[in-house]
Amino acid sequence: MTLVCAFCIFKSPGFPNLYGYILLLFAVMLGLQICVMLFGPRSWSSDEALHLQVIAQKVVVYSEILVMAFLAIGAMRALERGENDMTFQILEGF
Image (cartoon, rainbow, N blue to C red; front, side):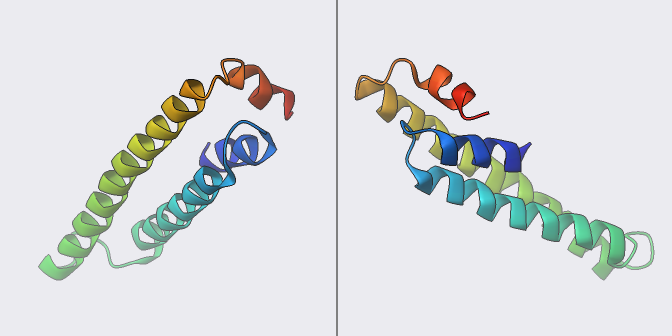
């Protein structure tokens, strides 16, 4: 979903590409967390492994909150500039 949203932002003339790059950065962080969950140490094997799993999950959740807040601020600024048909511009990218 993150990659699809980033693609739509890159195709939209009313949304700056900076927001798409922020989503791509989040996608990389999410991918790293998934790798830790799948290929890292199992959480029941030791306390250190459990801490690694918990920290990876918290980093992703907190970064998701920041990314969504950043995107919401960007969308509000785009609407304030008078780009009321921004949703249709994004959908036309498909």
